[in-house]
Length: 272
Image (cartoon, rainbow, N blue to C red; front, side, top):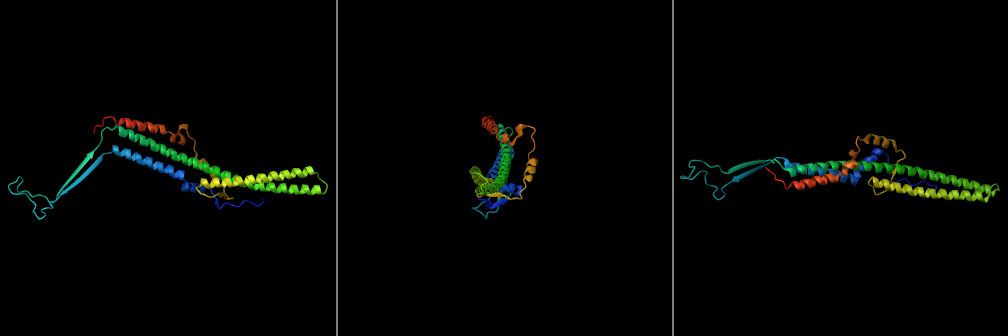
C-alpha cells in the first residue's frame, strides 16, 4: 500500500496545452461555433430579401430546319431589303427592388438578434469549459498531493505502531497504547484507499474534460500561476450585469417575439 499510485498514461504539462486540447477536442465548443455560423447564414438569407435582385436572360434563335437559307427577308414583305441576323440573339436584363417590406425587415432584425444570441452562447460555452477545465486541473493536483500525504501518514502510523508494540514487549507500555496505535493504522489505511480512489476519479474527470476516453494526470512541473494570470487577463469586469454572456444567450424570448412579429407582418401589403 505504500507504493505510489502509477502515473497516468498521459500528463498535461502546461495550462496552454490544456486549453489547446479543449479547443481541439471539445464537442460543445464545436456545436456552439456551428450555431454561430448557422445564425450568420440565416442573417445573410434575411438580408438577401431586401437587396436588389438582378436577372439577365439571353435568347438565341436559329433556323434548324433550313440551315442553308441565306439570311434576309422575302421580297414583297414588310422590311424588304433588310438583312436579318443569324442566329438572332436577345439579351434582357431586369432589376427589382422592394420599396416597403415590413416582414422582411422584421426577419432581418430577428436574424440579427439570433446571431447575437449565438455569439453570446459561444462565449458562455468557452467560459464554462475554461472553468470546468480549471476545476478539474486543480482537483487533480490536489488529489495527487493528498495521495502522497496519505502514504506518508500511513508510514508514520506503521512506525509508531512498531515502536509501541516493541515498547509493550519490553514492558514499557500497556495494551491500551497498542490498541490505540493499531486504530491509527486502520484509519490511515482507510484514508489512503479513499485518497487513491479520489485521485482516479479526478484523473477520469480531467480526461473527459479534455475529450479523452482515458484518465489524464498532471505533470509535477505544472505551474498553476499560468492559469491564474490567464484568468485575470480574460475575465474583465462588466459595467452592467445584463451584459453577461449567459444572460444574453438566454434571451431567446426576445428572438421568438421578433419572429412572431415577422409572421404577423406577412399580412401587410407589400408595394413594389
